[in-house]
Length: 146
Image (cartoon, rainbow, N blue to C red; front, side):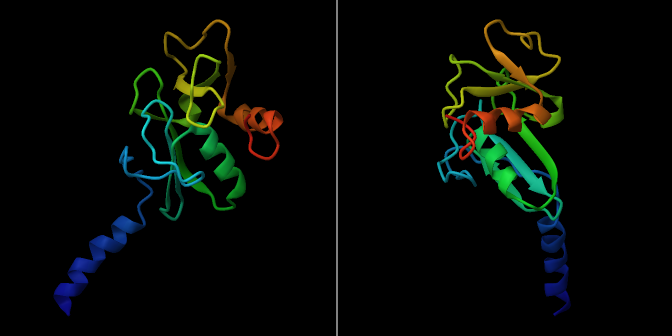
């Protein structure tokens, strides 16, 4: 019985962690639309303060899903488009909407680090995290994108 307790303690501690688990591209499904997450350039994830993991195939899926959640998030991060697969905190990101970007759900939305050399692209709309939700909901109040 004592040995079982020693095995369960680490499992319980890990299950309550707010550290994000890596996205298993090609295997994990989006928590909003259920599509398989495959593109490292547009993925996103969040972790609740209780340690629940949320993974998304597109930034717009995370925005819409978090709009529906009442639980507080400890971590919200998005893929850095200029370094696919590298995740950055939403507060460190500049969000770009441009027709040349083909995000999985059609919002043509990607994120880059604010201090990136391409952070001021021509012919693109740019948003900070706090403004992105309003922009997406303005595009389509139900889905948040076209």
